[in-house]
Image (cartoon, rainbow over all chains, first blue to last red; front, side):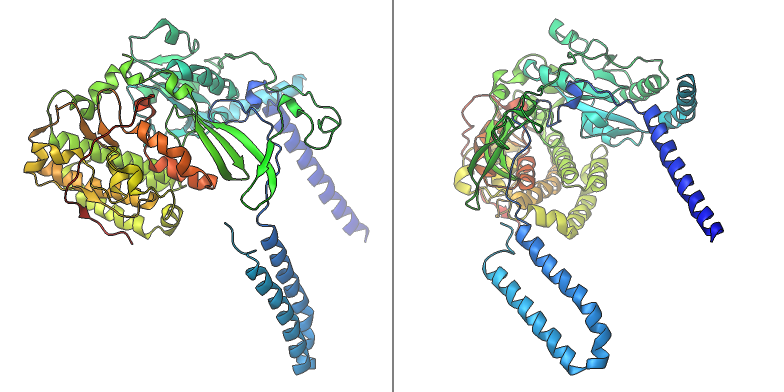
Length: 118
Length: 461
């Protein structure tokens, strides 16, 4: 038990030392100080007139929600696959109903144009 | 502190020989009358042209920069991080204004080896035999913090203040019926995908271009080709010579084929096909009439690259009515017009010349048109040694060229309407496909050259 703890401690200390060493080397090599002109974003040579904070329409939002719905469906299918052999047709019908409900959702989103980018 | 310095010195001694063997990272500022073409650097293994001054060790100034671009050039220099150096290929004759532009620059004359100079400067820079360039601009905060509150929001909501001294974007309706911010941005004059000197004021909503205006400073200098700075450019360009004196068809057509291949290499690079662009550039120095088979193989290869096809098909469509009779060369011919001033040249008439056309008028039709013209030009170059031109106007690779102007001003008038409503990637594809040359741009009326003839149509798929 103590040997295992010691090994874990050694791994932890070695990892921490490596991290600190890499940071130290980075600090030595890197010159973080920059001048004002060096901080101007490059878009061809002229500085921007307006701040870059701006709100735009995240058009992938509806697609991302649809992806999440079907991603979660796959998560539910793992435990279902375990009991499918034991339960047989009942489990199959239950999963079918679940998928049909989700499919109605995607058909609705399709009709509403959520899958069209432009 | 002593320990730290020793470690740093040890690491430097270890790494500097390796860094010296690495390709020289160069950011190029293209001016006029450069003895070396930027594309020549792209063919070198020991030089890496980068797309941002932040990634570069060496700023290469190619030729002379017109006055409206000099402030931007100084800003680009100031954006580079240390260690940095400037190498300037410039002619021996120049104005005092130019002479003081980059006081620390290593000057490379027309007869000197630029590539060796770049390598030498990088080695000297890394081994500290060459001091890093001092700043040309004062170390002033470009936009000092002036906001109120933890996020500089001015205390009146997220968009109420002037964080970092810059106002927030204004709101406007977007294509989805929402009221969202419009971000004004100035692109250029040294934005690598665009021709040097092109300055666009763009209003973006997300990545959708809502409005584009061409900055006035583009026209402020007038036609820089007539300014006397660029006599070398004039003498090297056979199309410029053909304005006043007859030039053999073979020379003109080989120059046209080379121009189109350089353009194609640039377009491929902008589409992320860097290696293929380099392969296309490798055709240029040794291009001769017998190489048409290689270009046909290249066209077959490009037809198989689906990403290039998808990103150009249906993008940036120009209608025939917009282009008719304006001398817009391959751009007009890609839209089905047979506008070509070679039709009225007796030398081309003897060769049975008929202009090649495509019908779609989009970016894909434009690159197919130019590649088709490369093959056609090689065939003409094989057949034609008789002199052409000398009549005051000539069909250059971009369109009808005259002593005072070229096709670029007319293309620039079409540009704002063409890219409005496009996503930014499509807008870049479209602007690149027009093959603009800002040196031709001036506040002149578009060229009017009505020509027509029987077209040899290549079918668009």
